[in-house]
Image 1 (cartoon, rainbow, N blue to C red):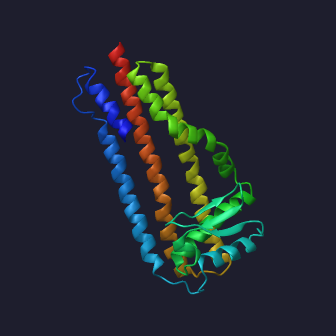
Image 2 (spheres, one colour):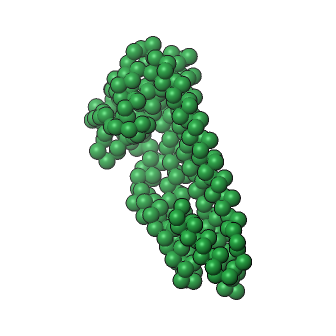
Image 3 (cartoon, rainbow, N blue to C red):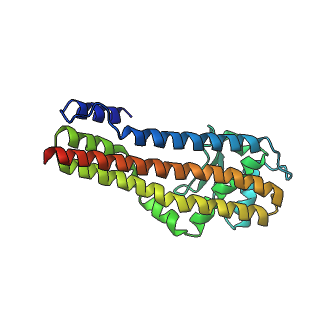
Length: 246
């Protein structure tokens, strides 16, 4: 956010006639979308965290059963601190479950654990979008760290190639987010199916779990929308830069 403010200050003091950067509307819109989705996700998870599953299994126990039923025996299940920090680490074949999931018997906890198992199954079955996402991680990390600094440097030094490099790096990070969408939705679909097939949950419980996973998936959708709005802002600012030099 500091870089964004510096960009506005730069334009305001280079005689471009901008007392206020109108593209801030895009940033505000992205923030509002993210905030609303986050509130919805936390509220949904909190609601179903209070609903105990009929099977009485913890998230860790449910994950172990799901992995075993899928014929996966080389994935470790570990506890990780934090709230909703659950994730599957394909490089080390470790499924890490957070405080609210690992030892909790709620349908929300089991649903999240099953979702992470979905990623483990994707890895075991060589699910293509997951492989693509893993392959572009280095480029995406590089892009997310350097896109705005390079773009801002291009503005400050009036060097258009730096602007374009910054935009291209930002697009690399955006591509990672877009590829993440089918990976996350597929993992949730696998989770719901496996919960049904293993008998861990009944139809009524699965309906509640589906709401939890859908709310979580929407955070990824909101992230993509936010990044698209950021990209639009980059393009608008670069366009203003080009007009200034014409």
